[in-house]
Image (tube, rainbow, N blue to C red; front, side):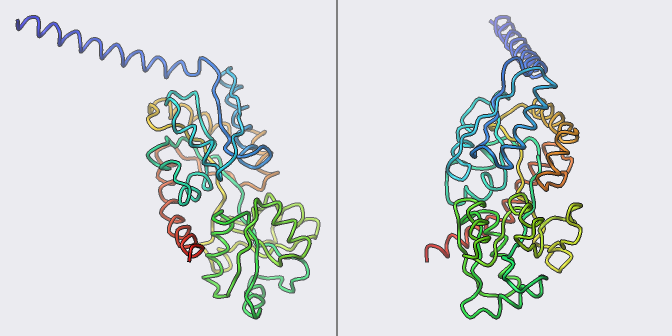
Length: 327
């Protein structure tokens, strides 16, 4: 009897060891087939551009197709939610980010940003810029604050939408600079910029990627930017931090994530190659075109801690804005 128990125990140990070896071999061999990268937004934006750039790099390195699928809707939560339900084998990934995995889940309870995902690598993103119509007399941030404070009904300003990063940045700045304001939320940054160009609104908080060409053409005036340092292509544009608002240093960042439970060795493998991809000439050119600063060179655990810190930073503000909308 004792012998049979020992034999059964031995077989279980060998079976477990064999399963572990097989799992390690699968992770080492990954990918052996095509990998799907879901971009939870429509084509054409920064998330799409970054997703396709990284997909192309991974395709070149691993010699397997990395197929980008655009699954827009729900402020990025629909496509992301589909990935959360996928197998954690590395064959379904998502271009995550501050919009879809920090801000949107405050109102859209599609998933838990931390427990339903494995966060793999930071990809970067553009800063937000405060831009005004040229008819606005302000040319500096102090002049803009004085202008906003003088307006009898407060300042009307636009963003890509209620609850977006631009909305949060604008509200945070108004509270710090002590002026009354009325937020005008649009269905994306492009409609906000269109109304700004047309004079329907005097100011907007949008990504530099959206407004950069109009700023350079003199059709909009940039007042300050949330980048950690001045942009090389626009060295005269001051940052909020150097003007006394360090809490407004922020980017609309995007990243690479997968379903919860991905094996750490596989996560490290994808993280390492994604980070190498961000240093290639092709991606550096994309960064220059999009006004993106090179992201921190973080391993997966460090990046995961950053996601949590962004939740701690922005969720309380997003909730307070949501409560204000309901009142």
